[in-house]
Amino acid sequence: MEVTASNFDEAYQLFKSIIDQAAFVAIDGEFTGISADDRGGLDVYEPIAQRYEKMSKTIKNFLLMQCGLCAFVPNEDKKSFTAYPFSFYVFPQSDNASAHKSTFLCQISSIKFLSQHKFDFNKVFSDGITYLNPIDEAERRQKITEKMKVAWEKEDEKYTTAKDNKFPYQLSFKINDSDEPFVKETIQLIDNWLSDDSKKDIQFPPSSGFYRKIIYELLYARCTDKNMLPETIRDDSGIYIVAKKLNDKEKEKMIEEKFKTRLSELDASVGFCKIINLLCGANIPVIGHNMLLDLLYVTNQFVSPLQSDYQKFKEIVHSTFPKLYDTKLMTTTEPLKQYFIDSSLAAVEKRSQEEPFKDVPIEISKDIGCNDFNSIFHDAGYDAFICGSVFARILYYYDSLTTNGKEYCDLQCEILQPFNNKIKMHKLMDIPYLNFGGDDVCPSRDHVFVMQFKQLWSVSKIHDYFSAFGGARLVSIDEASYYIVLSEEKQSLNVLQTQVGEFQDYSLQSYESYTRRHEKASSTNKRPRDSIIDSPKESMAVKKRRSENLKIFNESSEW
Image (cartoon, rainbow, N blue to C red; front, side, top):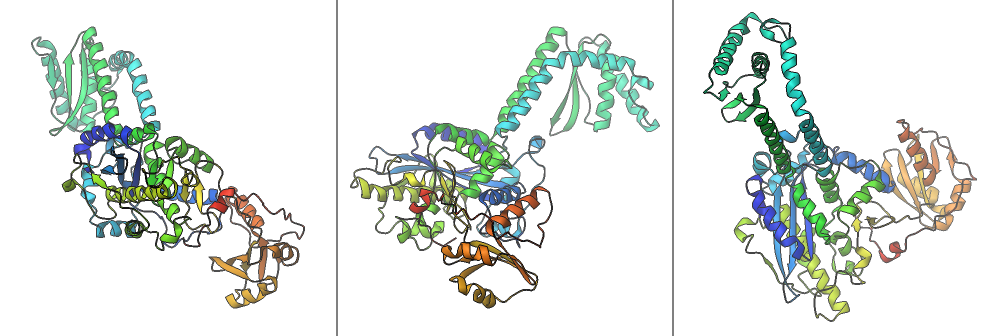
């Protein structure tokens, strides 16, 4: 179901009616970009918190434009599902500009990619669903409430201020001669209205902001008995002022209704965040494929602006989505890894329809309708549907290993638990996943060194240099620096004690020293110095705190 602002209320009611029946919901997103610098590569040995910091800074520049959600409701036979796929087009509206940034970036490659896959940008920009995350909503609600409390006093102040204005016509500023005809005409309109008891309202013609200011000041200056309340109206004819004659009781009631309207408008501006709130409240598993970016964007736009602190980010995500499963991680890890040579979503979807996986009957709900569903990859709703379908087949496969196919696998089953709240981590050599449910994998990197050159060596010369220590793998950091990954970890102490230091055409330092100096330089907003010397007595306490989960996840070198 394609959802825009025009049919959002209908989609919201449908999603609300089925979310508590769903076994799980799959999610996917389409973005205006994923990298602020196409030239920049990722550091495959950087600390995970540093990686998060880079990604969060980048994501704040872009927008999620389409969010796909697909709820999977098990049928009575427990062996089939009814799917409810939604493609929500989302875009911040101008009246939410104070809460959302008014500009965003577009990455050329991302826009071109979406265009090639028939993405409808007009639906985003002309009819996108607005949104207001809980933090912005609470701030606005508080401001409206505070304004309502002092509204009556503010009205009295306006009459007093108008009475004390010193400029001609009781204005608070001097006008040009060219504006005098407008002022005189307005005064005449106001006086005629005040003297005619049969006229309760007066509507002024649409005008500029400057002229509207004049109208407001003249109204408060001429209405000495304080029996009037003006308001600004915006409609297709323009922006204009309407004033009404009211007694104190009527004014109080109108002010109250005005603020009720503002609160109602605030509720409407929450928009797509209502869907996320329903999903959060359902407390059911959320499934994605390589879903870290999806979580980053969804969190930043619809939950809370991304925190600079990595642990706080994990806490926010876990409290919002306490049950996460990533089919990318699952299909690149045993026991499923052997069946998936290619772990892209399209390839995984195709392979999961072959042996040893079972065909799981999944019918798209008649409430959605096939005619309102884009069956093409890179439509977020369709990708969410495919991801959820893959997950359902995985559940059946696990079922065949545990319960002899009597019913689909319990989401609490033992085989599934190692993947709970673990999200595929992209391009980190020895950290296969990010763990939202606990501590991250903390591998030892004592066998990793950093070699920086003043006069560049050939790759073969570097390999020859470390051949005496059992050989090494080289990973480029930049054009003058390499990670040196020793093939024999037992040689780490030997290299540290005999080779680390600064020499004529290069320097060699331990990974620990490199990251420590890099973090210090970053915290003081300075670049790391080229001259780096490690003490041979540097601590070699090998980090034995390898997570037990790392043994479970015998990760491949595929990124």
